[in-house]
Amino acid sequence: MNKRQLGASGPRVSAIGLGCMAMSGTYGPADRAEGIATIHAAFDAGVTLIDTGDHYGMGHNELLIGEAIKGRPRDSFELSVKFGSIRNVWSRAVGVDASPRAVKNFVAYSLTRLGVDYIDIYRPARLDPDVPVEDTIGAIAELVKEGYVRHIGLSEVGAETVERAAAVHPIADLQIEYSLINRRLEGDILEACRRHGVGITAFGVLARGLISGHWQKDGERQAGDARWEDPRFLGENGERNLALVEALRQLGEAHGASVAQMAIAWVMAQGEEFVPVVGARRVNRLSEAVAAASIALSPQDLARIDAAVGAGRNQSSLVPGSEAPRTADKPR
Image 1 (cartoon, rainbow, N blue to C red):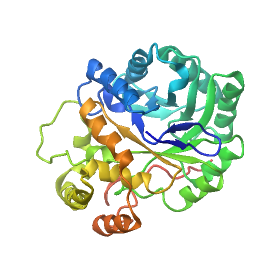
Image 2 (cartoon, rainbow, N blue to C red):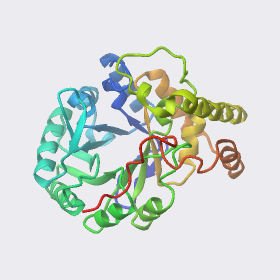
Image 3 (cartoon, rainbow, N blue to C red):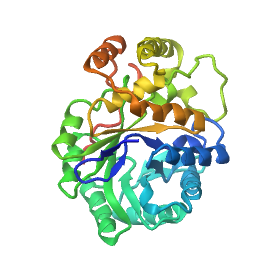
């Protein structure tokens, strides 16, 4: 698999990254053996960027990854870790703590669970409304000096935060949801990233499976699958979004590509600074995703896709009438 430079200051990583959240029960029961097999298959396919969060499965995800990478040369892969999400005993998010003291506490636990000496990219999972982002980035910068972290990233923040963070320390990348039906990155956020040499690791490129070509509105509901509570998947909203999937399926036939592969290839075609992070918990889904790296979409292809899906049709990741996007900068 080809590699891409992740921002002006970041590492060179595989053109597609593997997001591991779903391996820890977010979209249904977790299968430890299948999760490890999927990570190993990703390495075999040339994927080097592995993304997780210390709150995925309340630490389960980091332990799973730690088991999967055991014995592999440390310089053969990159670990991207999010921190700061505060959870209760039911694994529900109840706040964010990105204070300097918390940063150094969280990283100690992550290093232990992963079984590594350093993390390649470390980032707050969300903006802490009670802590200036300069303080958070400054604390991670100290970890960079100490060798526990190699690069600093951001997640789900607006243009102002990108500007303020970059003034403290070079930022490797912004991790943000971005897909054919979620274009809110475009505009001032992307402009700020390009101005400061910040790469984009795009998650949700398949809209949590909605535009994967595999989601069925009448499919069997699995316990713990959060998508059955997401307005994008339900009722008339789901009907409209699945109609877009069918349009993408028809366009993919010319490339011999699946809906998922077309959606991933579209993100990659937005610029060399884009690295889609594809969530997979089974080997067969991973195989389909990594094949998208070989699809080259022409300007004509991109125009047809925008015409079929509707460029900028849905600037939020959610349908009209649901909760607002979470990327806006919060006042201090």
